[in-house]
Amino acid sequence: MTNTPTNTRVFRSILITGASGGIGMALAAYYAAPHCTLILWGRNPQRLEEISMRCRACGAQVVTREIDLQNGQAALAAYAEDDQAHTPDLVILGAGLADIQGHDSLTEDPEKVFELASVNYATPISMATAAARAMITRQGGQIVLIGSVAGFYELPFAAAYSSSKAGLAFFAKAARLAWQRYGVFVTLIAPGFVDTAMSQRLESPRPFLVSPRDAARIIARAIAERQAECVFPSPFKVLNVLMCFMPKTWREYILLRLAVGQKGRE
Picture: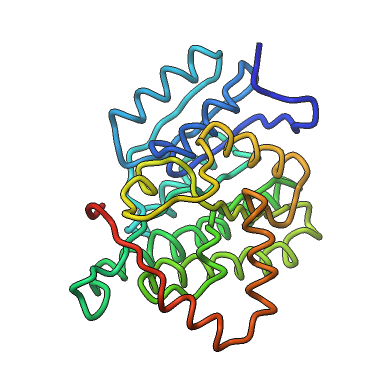
């Protein structure tokens, strides 16, 4: 028995970045099936091996690549190799970093800001463009960018993270308009709190927490329906609307008084 519901499109070859993380692993497990080749990228070799074994047990062909996406040029070169060898028709760009300004710091760490900008924005939009160029020549494909609801808010304690996700969201909108005429569809995924190692580091409540498995199901449905944007869980959709209509002074008052910390650094 497979995980694939009746409304899910069948993909022949799927590339997933961040496949050694919570959401990426869950998506790899979700799509694992005899008809499919999975190209799994991640930073953690042990977790890559773990998810590879699970996917192969489901009958999928699996190729792994241990890579750090801070090096955008290396990522593009690696993508070109995997695209030539496996011609993915679905690319899920899910790798990401998060960081929060320490309570005793006046600003975020400049080096961490650069890492976040590279991994969360510069590398995925470059890879998305490379994927689109290849897919256009093959007359179709789908690209998924995994952002965050944090991209809808100017978080003063996580300016680099929230702005990198905001940039990713804007890119997804523009790229969808540019590429859909060629049969290449772009979906932005903007999750709230998912129970992954990244969110477990937060020293604050995690309202409406979603498991990685449930997140994978929601994301797969959005992909199957070729949604332009998928925000989940649903309370965050309501919050986004409320914040849009809230006076600027009220919005800034609330954001400045949010207190969020983290247990450690990635």
